[in-house]
Image 1 (cartoon, rainbow, N blue to C red):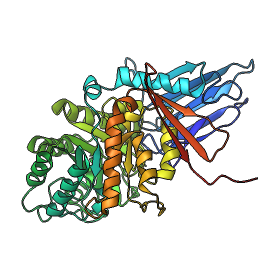
Image 2 (cartoon, rainbow, N blue to C red):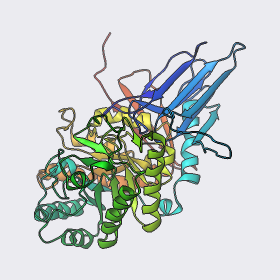
Image 3 (cartoon, rainbow, N blue to C red):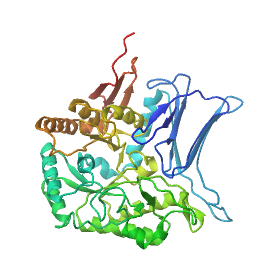
Image 4 (spheres, helix red, strand yellow):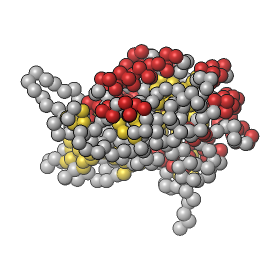
Length: 475
C-alpha cells in the first residue's frame, strides 16, 4: 500500500500486489511532496485495518527521495529508501562522510491499526517535546479564507473579538500583512509590516488578541521571494537557480538560496525581529511552490537546501523556544517525522471541504496522531470545491484532530456561530481523550461509510465518529 495525492487531495491510498520486479517511487519536487509521500506498507495477503501481518516504513526526509520494495528470487522481500542526490551534488572524498535520514519501520501482527499505534506512540514519546504534552492544543482561528489579502486592523480585531466569544484560543493572521502584499504576485521576501494597512502598528492588534485571552500567531513564507519585491530588486542573485537558465516560477514566486549566508541571515533576522518585538506565540511557516533546478555557485543543491531549511528552523527554535511552529506547504506538501522534530502541527491540506477531509485525514492517520493534524471548520460553501456542508458535518470532521476555524466569524449568522461554539466546546471536552488515546480505523462492508474511533489507553472511554461519504447505492 502506498500514498499519493496532489494539492487539496493529499494522503490518498492505493494497494497493489508486490511481485517480482518490485515497486519504485521517486520524488524530485524538493519537499516531502503531495504526490509521492515517503512511506509504504507491505503485508500478508489481504492485510487490513484489524488483521494481518503488516510492515510499515516512513522515510523521514523533506526533500527528494526514492523508495523501492522488491521480491527476491527465494520469495523474501526487501525495502530501500534513499535521498536522491542530483548529479555532482555530493562527492565523498577521503575522510568525508554523509549522514543519511532516519528510516522508521515497524511490524504489526494486528493489521494497519497496530502499525499506526506504533508510529503514534513513537511520535508521542520520542519526537514531540515534553512541553507539547503538558499544554492542550489551542483551538485556532486562521484569517486566510475569511479575508485573504484584505487587511484592516479594526476589522481584524472585530474578528478576534468574535472568535474569543466562540471559545477560540489562538488567533492567527495569515498572508497579506507585509509590504507590497495585496495579492500573490508581489511582496514575498519583504518581511516588514505594511504601514499603509497597519498605520498604528501591529502591537495594537496583538495586544487586543492577548487581552481577549488568546495567543497570537503570524504567517510567514521565509523560503520564497516574488520578482516584484524590494528584496528581489536588491538581491536577484539570492535565487536558488542554475546560472544561465531562466528559473520557472510557481505561484508567481521563486525559491531563496538558503546556502547563501547573507540570504539565510537576512531571513533569520526578519523572523527574529518580529518574534522579539511582539508577543507572537505561533508561526505558520508556509512553502507554496516546489524546488526545481536548485543550484548554488554552479553546483546542484537540492539536498543542502533541505538541510539549510532545517538549520533555519532550528536556529529560530533555539532563540525562541516557547514559539510553536506549524509546517504548511500549500497544505500537506511538507509532512514527515523530521519536520515534526522541529515543529508542532501540520496543515493537513488546503482543502477545508469536510467530505474530502474525511479521506485525507484518514490517510494521514496511518502515521500521525490526531494532535498534530490541523483540522479546520471552513465556511459552509467550501472555497476549494464549491460544495456546501452543514455545520454538523463540518464540526464533527474538524473535531478529530487539532481543531481550528478558518472563515470570517463576523459575517457568519447567529446559527452558524452557535454551531462553531458548540463544536469548540465539544472538542475541548474530548481533547484529552482525542490527543492521548489510540486511533482506530474501523472497516465497514459499505465503502460509502467511514468509521473512526479513539479509545483511551486504559479503555475507560471512547469516541466513535461514523461518516456517510456518499449515498448508498441500492442494487
